[in-house]
Length: 309
Image (cartoon, rainbow, N blue to C red; front, side):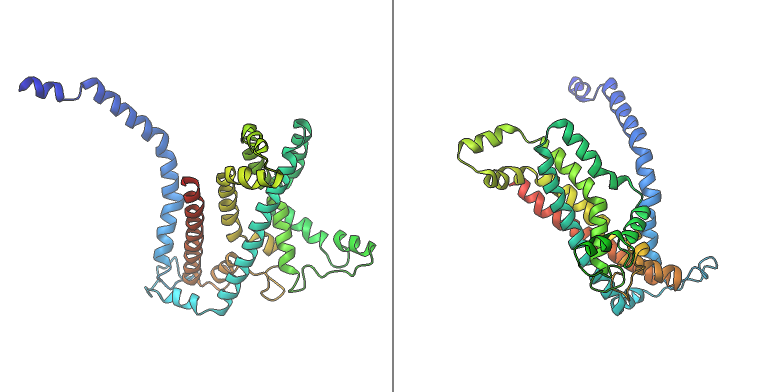
């Protein structure tokens, strides 16, 4: 009986190795977990508390933050401007993400057919806007789309077309911002899609050709299914970026004309730092976070289930 107990006990050396493994795991993961806890998780918890209080930047230091429960959320949901900017954000996100993903896929398909040296040069040129400062890119496009002196309108005038009020007309302001951001993010989507395309074994295409599949059938039945994880990555990242858009709108149109291009992050900024309604601004921030989380989980569910099947 004693021999069985002794033999079943873990050896001292094995326990030491296990302790060492845990120490090394804590050593490498600890700083990253501490960073996320301090700069990400803790602010979210603080925001959750702040959203149930009425306070401003002027009264924050005095500790005058009376508890109001869900009143801030009620004020947000009753705010007509909030629903207008939420609609603007959804429109911007839909067309920006859709345009970036679609054009990124098409450009990557075209580049995948080029010779390696020409492909690398083209990829570098297309990727350059990604590394350009977002403020700088917005200023460049604001100048290009200027009604009187912008190069875009001067180019249209060469064909006898009238100048378009890109940034001052409610019908054109949002498309102008969308075009700017698709141009800015196209290189990122192209690089990711191109990497995914180059990882697809050519034997799949050869087998499909032997079975009589044409170019469209090979694309639909071979390329797209194998690019599903890549498409998920590009879509989710672009979706998160699009929902948090602020800089190009603020620089190019300042949310105008009227509220035609005002988006959620800009409205949160105005409520918090211009009207000092920090409780309401925090509530809107949490609603935005929940919306991004829900939509991302839906995408992960749809794409992930297709991958499993």
